[in-house]
Image (cartoon, rainbow, N blue to C red):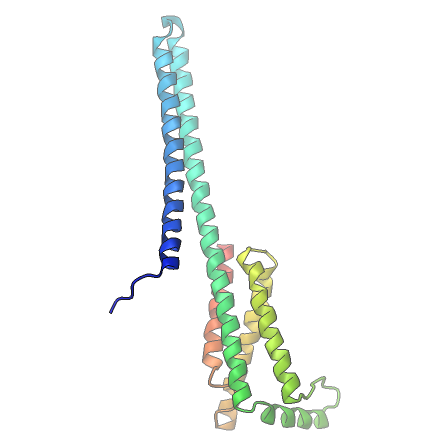
Length: 221
């Protein structure tokens, strides 16, 4: 059964429609005023003295061409602005999607006891090579750091929405780290011959990382 729209949805749809109508009206007014100026100037040139009609006709043609050129430039700028806005919104959605995938991945690791694999592996690697700077964690510290990271990355989406240039290289780094994380979980699972902690959400992490890379690259096209 089709759900009837809520008052908030109706108000939002009405606002979007009103804005679209206002933009269309402004474009039509600019076109109409430009056309009226050309017609008035043409009439003035034909009503003038015969001696200056030739010069007036040339000026009229030049004026009409300049007016048409300005209208074309205005529409081209509007299309470019709409395209940049669309790319920026897709970039924002991809960033939010990867933050959500990371949150699911953290929950996956917390529920499947990731530290029972991580801490013994780190201890063994330290015994073989003491120079490795790999820390061990308690469950509370590990979960607190990851939750803070998820919230911080989600808060940084504000700058992605605003289209800050610095968020493009940061997006590549974020997506690259998460892509490597998901691939590492899958590779270790294949090596050990069993599904380890965090591997269930790794495909979601890979898909969200690739989506963020694609939407970030769209800024350069």
